[in-house]
Length: 395
Ligand SMILES: *Cc1c(COP(=O)(O)O)cnc(C)c1O
Image (cartoon, rainbow, N blue to C red):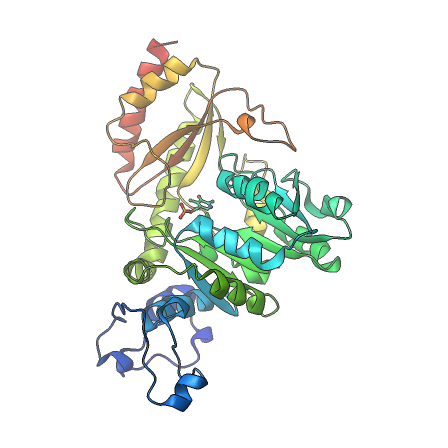
């Protein structure tokens, strides 16, 4: 076997690409991985080279071999023209938005968007003269009726944060493109392994690398990828903000990338086992998981996605907050905290009623969001079984 990258990686399946993408051992003295390049200053050999900024790198904010390993691998996986790395998933979203909207423009955002995305739109974007309209995530091709002359972009997220509605991304993209608007997607849940964003009509795709790319709850990172048309604008905005990620985080994300396929499939398997078990619990009204045949978004999920992750929601039968607290407070294995995508199981209560504006969220009971980690399913079930007993005792 040679120490150079395989030729024509496009002929390989995604699992093979995840192992080889963005690596060139021959450029690293034969070592398998690209090392961590730390640095600000990049030296130029001559006056003339400096004047023309000649060379692959010119300053620490605009890239390094460590960064390039990850962005090249990600572009290959996502089917993108290029990718930029940002210090968090939220930063990846803000760079994506700032690349396409300007003062006087109109932006359509799904009502099911990740809440900090809304806060950015209602705060910074509004302050800079961008008008934002929230829309029903189930709108599909009906998005056309909400589009105006100055609509520059439509932001989609599937499934929705917390509420897990599926969106018909290809239908929305077709209408948006006919009107000259960009489609920006938060694709964190599926990753490009389960939803190839640019093949489905997305122009700029965002991934919180903090989640499954890390897989270890040990880093913060964002990745924004763009197709040919939007890459120049994305790259320019990224360079102007100099919103670059740290080299250690990029290195750790590369390490996570190599095993992401394996981990995601296990999160999917474990998540489905837990979701089906929860469906049969008498305390549960509904499980919000698009890979379950009973889910209203299942048909779209089946058509467009090739897998599901370990993150889903549950609506409990009506119960007072003190009963939900009794359930959650005594859990031994499930942690309570934000973020997800690591090896450990998590649960948080959620209530979309507090921030939705375009649609009503009346699920019929308290909401819990689960992230199913890599523990034994039987142990997780026993932990929740004891939690449900505490919930019933507190009703
Ligand atoms: C966590 C998350 C983000 C933001 O990622 P951070 O790295 O925490 O900023 C964006 N979108 C979704 C759907 C997320 O779950």
